[in-house]
Image (cartoon, rainbow, N blue to C red; front, side, top):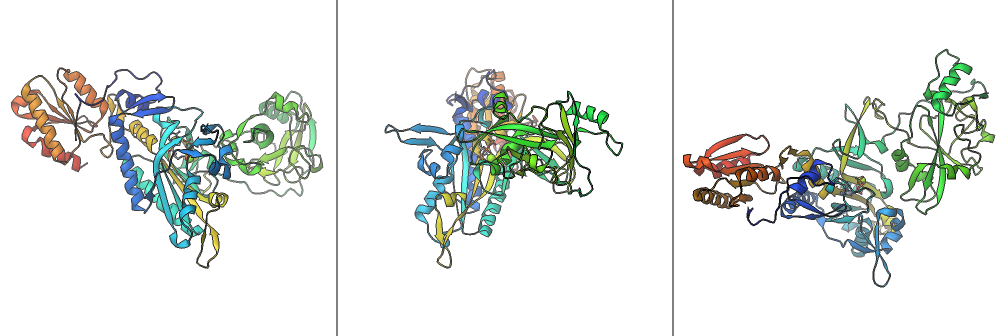
Length: 601
Ligand code: ATP
Ligand code: MG
């Protein structure tokens, strides 16, 4: 196809849109690929659609290659299936809910596990029908708290979501592995560097899960990696746990006056004065047990206090707490999490701010349920049995010294909750961790039987017994991929698309006024098209060469063919958008030259 700029629905802009912060957002708007319709909601213009379709096509081919079949669900769905899995509530404020004229509840789907499960239940009933993988490429709706960065975090966005159905765990492992391999191929074909990282399953439930992160400074996800291959989302990093300590000869704990020591710093300084370490070394923050009071807002709206005990040299990372606290709460779903405020503390008068501790002995425990209805008390994995701590004595101005974990106090659970630092050891022993930022491009989950159980998806197995199906779910952010591609392929002048997704193969520019220039440019465009290429032809009369070149560079097609002054000598200029290298090529060789360039890249 030849897209003529005199006809194409395109207006490029000289100025960055005022609401844009990141390069992909600025350039996709300026180069006429997308327009904002509302916060986090975008209209696709012809050039944008062309790139989007190419990304989708690559995904479709790789899904077909693993035998996944395409279907298409509505985005507007009834409440009931989501009620059955409790996600109507669990999704919290992220869900767009609406009602029809009769007052029945509907939602705009944020993801489609329920519908796929019900569809398979509707039509299939035997193990012979499985394994099965279905997918769709479809709009999703999430009322994101902070839609940002254009297409990177939208409230309407396109996702490719697939779902696998198997009779047993081995089948699920195979489906998961097939999707994982397909994802690596998709991102390789797109030319997007991604790192698969271990992830937590979050609100989706299920067990094994990995994210495919595109490393970039503007990413909202922090992940860690070691030099020799370990990589994980920060939420999923597991702490290297110290060995348990024999406390049979540890002295009894004692309470000492520590006036004016409400912070870890003041406590460490005072401790070195009044209670020097027996071995002559100095106490450090790591010797103290800091008890952080958090308020959790449950999906039901109820507020619950949780206390987390961590070594005093570590900050609590709320994202890690949020990802891992689910197992300790009475209801599943999206929660709110913050430091407890004055109002919360008022309801728990036993909490002495700055001097909170688990209690001097097991039977005086303030924290940890241990049969009594005490406050839920979770600890960092470094608090292992036999470790000795300096911590609050639950009285202003007093701390307890030599409090032994497992002897003097206990806890309701162990939680990954503290900040992960550069230099921390990787859990697989592969060396120190470094931290980096990234954007999640894809996410694969072993859901297991959670959805099949909730919606009663069973098949008859080989022995004629009803078994619950096990499922996986796999998502790629399609519109996010377009943005990530723009983010990683641009320069000061504009976009620089990789060939696989460029809106055209070649951008022909007629530069100057002569009729022969336009006639030659026109003919070359038609010949390039006849050779099977997608062509943009800047045929606009009376537009200056500067504006035409500026637009060509902004739009970012990989090859620019300029027909201009050189024509009197029988040559045109063919320029590589990425390297900026230009070559004069004889007019009658130009088509072959471009065709070869496209083929060889
Ligand atoms: P994030 O952590 O970035 O919010 P998520 O974990 O909520 O993403 P999933 O539910 O795993 O996302 O969705 C699958 C894929 O859909 C993601 O890997 C991402 O590429 C894409 N995606 C999710 N939310 C958005 C969004 N708001 N805008 C664009 N793409 C998105
Ligand atoms: Mg995800």
